[in-house]
Image 1 (cartoon, rainbow, N blue to C red):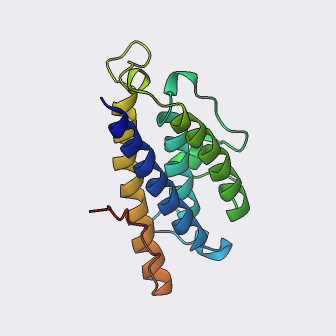
Image 2: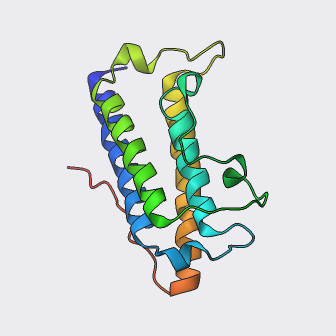
Image 3: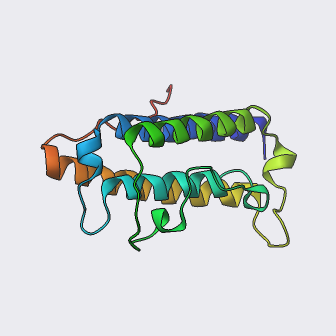
Length: 160
């Protein structure tokens, strides 16, 4: 893998994080309570953020955030909920960790296997890109269904 590939990963990761930010900015607390179809939107956000937090860098070293409750990630019900402020705060923490990780990303690091499995750090990145964009699309549809407006996707504009 070349330095150019590392730069591409860094750039596209920035676009991914911006899309999360734009989508989160498009919701207020009342919209976060809406179920689509059975999970409230806040749970969709939390599920996406938690997965990004756990798997983007290194799941072996992952520690649950202080706001975590196991049912927050699933359709299972339980008491309590997360507010927009809590989701934004959690995202800010995740983003800082990811940006720090991306700053030190190298060819040798990206090809490094994680734990005892056969996944590399590149595998983890690509898996999270797919997973996050699935949720971004779902959240965009949910937001548009409720408000009539769709958050604006952040697109990478190549320099031709």
